[in-house]
Length: 116
Ligand SMILES: Cc1cc2nc3c(=O)[nH]c(=O)nc-3n(C[C@H](O)[C@H](O)[C@H](O)COP(=O)(O)OP(=O)(O)OC[C@H]3O[C@@H](n4cnc5c(N)ncnc54)[C@H](O)[C@@H]3O)c2cc1C
Image 1 (cartoon, rainbow, N blue to C red):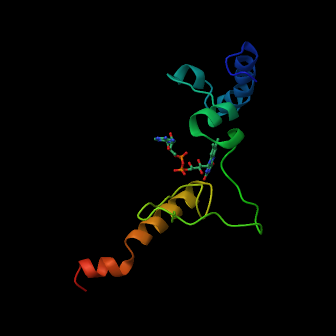
Image 2: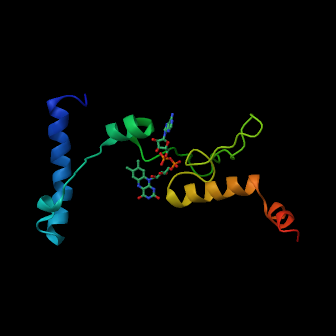
């Protein structure tokens, strides 16, 4: 769909309606209590988060391969996030950041700094 079209705007509000109704069961005046509401769609994820076709994130099928390590061919440049090992999702992304930090500053470097 063209994200500037009337059809898209209608579809977006129709899909959001399901979530509003679910929330209203718990918080009946939720709509009046919201100052700002933003509805995201796969087109939003594609545009603002650079997600391929608006997906949740990159995926490599189990058994087919692994996400790349933080190292890159450029010396001193490391990557972390959901395009690197272990993959998508906040826990995996946090682990990727920790692994990258550990690659730069492993425990023996910490001990050296502490003169241990
Ligand atoms: C709809 C949706 C639902 C999800 N639900 C869950 C969930 O329930 N649980 C879960 O664990 N995970 C979920 N995920 C996955 C999770 O959000 C991602 O795996 C995670 O946020 C990726 O973190 P990241 O730091 O690698 O990238 P991002 O969080 O995408 O951060 C990348 C940042 O870089 C910025 N950026 C991009 N290009 C540039 C540039 N050129 N210059 C400067 N900045 C730039 C972007 O604006 C963004 O802020 C979901 C993802 C989506 C899309």
